[in-house]
Amino acid sequence: MEARGAGPFGGGTMSVATVLVVEDDARLRELVRRELEAVGYRVVEAASGGDGLARALDGDVDLVVLDLNLPDVDGIEVAERLRADVGDVPILMLTARADVKSKVEGLYAGASDYLTKPFAVQELVARVHVRLRERETPDELRHGDLVLQPSSATVRVDGRVGVLPERECEVLRLLLANRGRVFSKDDLERRLYGSDGPGSNTIEVYVYQLRKRLQLLGVDDLIVTVRGKGYLIV
Picture 1 (cartoon, one colour):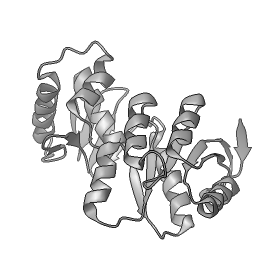
Picture 2 (cartoon, helix red, strand yellow):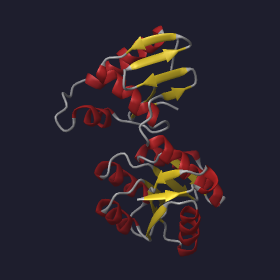
Picture 3 (tube, one colour):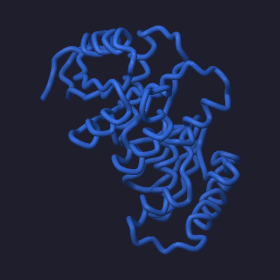
Picture 4 (tube, one colour):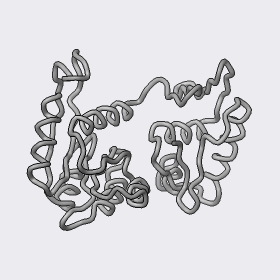
């Protein structure tokens, strides 16, 4: 299905993305639905965590707007189950908790981004747009002066070029395409090998070698280790 015109994001023809809004506040859910539909998105609604999970599993969902405080299943648990059962779907978490601990907890659970209530609905729409754009498979992924071209497994930094082994390239691609999200060693292993991963310290070796290759290109401390959790790029 296609729609013409992308509201404030420009004209032209674009594929219609489906956004699942999981929010128990009916007025807020309705407001978010109207604003997202106004710029061309298809919206599916759910008033509880359980309903949201069921709807996500029943059909193709491109992004989930997820309230943290739900009446049945906590938003953290919903995010964890979505990541386990649905995969790469971006999650924009809505929370009334402004403390850093709550936000970090949401990111660990699999959220791609968060908004603290109250928020401007225009900002929510903009963040949805950005996260969906990031989800597309680009020819290039950029981070400052670093440019990764997954198709050729090459990294460019200020004119210097490095070629990455296939697995290391995929690790870097995943981390760059999901900036701010923590990937555990198990997460990365599943992405690289499916359910038949080699185990042991394979991912640690890939990350170690990848860091060394990036250092040769003048890039230090790009991949952050979160003790006891995994790796991310911020």
